[in-house]
Image 1: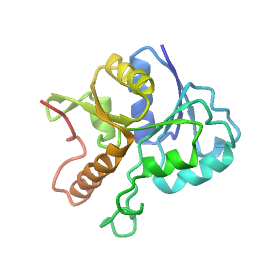
Image 2: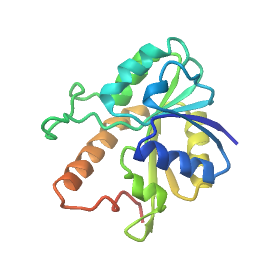
Image 3: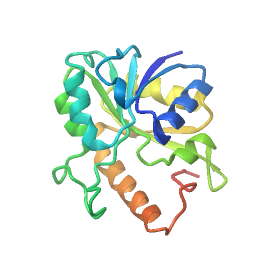
Length: 191
């Protein structure tokens, strides 16, 4: 099994941690107040925080991400207006993270899922699907195997360049939920 460190103890961090633990993996959490003081012990580090928090986390752990797989779950929304993404056109939060952490293997995952669909392992009656994008095939396999062991589907969505499209899907899904057009128990699944 794999060891995971999840930075973030909110709904998503807790849901992802529970899913990974259900698959027999070792999971530790780092809360907001412990960032920079608790070590990144896991082979895989999941950033279950809002996109604006990423820069401070990187600064708090200089060099600590080198050699690790880092999973970016963020959706880089403009949280003031909810009408746009805040990364450069054609880029993604994951691409920005990979540029900031050249010694890490960056993956994009969980950003098209709501916490309730990870806890309940279904979205409107169908098994939840986690899409995973990244450039390192071995890192993607470790994550997809862990997710599937936890009881949901996982699909390799391609290279890290696909994070751009995954973030667009996440953006659409969040704006629909905030606008009460869909519920927070709905989500992404492939049938």
